[in-house]
Image (cartoon, one colour):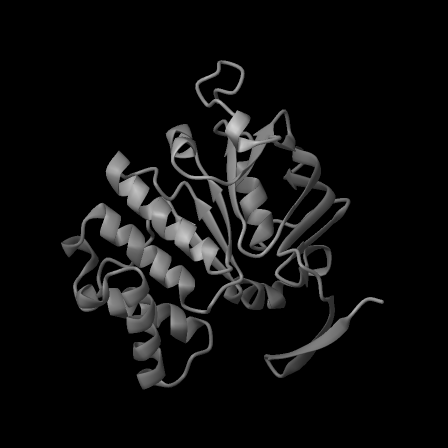
Length: 258
């Protein structure tokens, strides 16, 4: 017997109902096709991600990794097949519902996308206000809590330019954690960092996954596979293939080089 529950959201004086099947998967995609304009980017995409799983997403530049991430956070709509993310049916997702989807997803970008004209705390408060938080005291407390999780509580009132690249990326991760997301989508989060700082960011993302939040991370840095375990999805020839075992994957093998 399937267990169903109702979720009611009030948005712009309209009530939206959605019926969600309780399932283990945070992401579930079956036979999905993704297009940009008239061009098919990916087709017959089949994969799932469960709570607490860490999944690498690899592929050449232009292979479709970013398009897949965009679909998962509601910027692109799936065509054909079915796709569910954090309880939302992406095939039926309305534009008014996208903010609610994104409140359950934390997004970590390569280029940080911090507001450089305000402090670290003000960056976090900006997101909290945008996602419906009202009480200043609670917002500041939550900001300090997530900064503490990433080891930057003492930097709450510094400006972003006063932080190193690795510290700025930790602020971005703290920002992604503000609303206790079920899923973190990380798009090349170590791309602008040196190798040692990259490992620090990876250890942090791995720790987040161990606490039960699923992490899907797009990366070109195959050296990370030597140090961190996870499932690997490879985007190639307009499809997504799961590599059988990370332990058998040699990123320096010519066949696997991107």
